[in-house]
Length: 161
Image 1 (cartoon, rainbow, N blue to C red):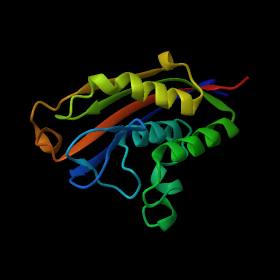
Image 2 (image 1 turned 30 degrees about the horizontal axis):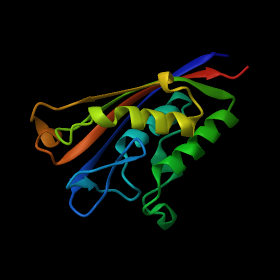
Image 3 (image 1 turned 120 degrees about the horizontal axis):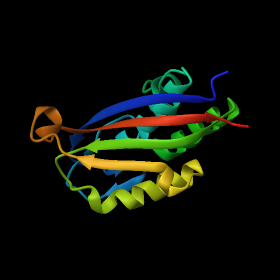
């Protein structure tokens, strides 16, 4: 049996008014927020998809479908906790996570440590097991036009001993 597995994840949501901007479980002050069935936390969603993908378990839409009203407005950290339990129940633990959030605004650098610490607490990891980087799209495409924010994540899973 393979003792390590790697998964990648991606998510994008549209920016709209009258919604909170939540990234990595942290609410960030901004005039726009992300539109989605849950809280639309693209960073947390990308991490969950990477975790599930590493074990060929599908994606978050399979477990938390937008057609199911019980997930309306859901806190993505609650969903992350459930995905983490599923991974552990399968006999795996997270080795590390690396991620990138792509947004023109707001500037995310001041929030990265809070996001990392929040995700580490939920996933029972050390903060140095989670990498979060922020970049812009250099004004290109829908993210560059500030129509949305996207995130990419890679997760290394290690077989529990």
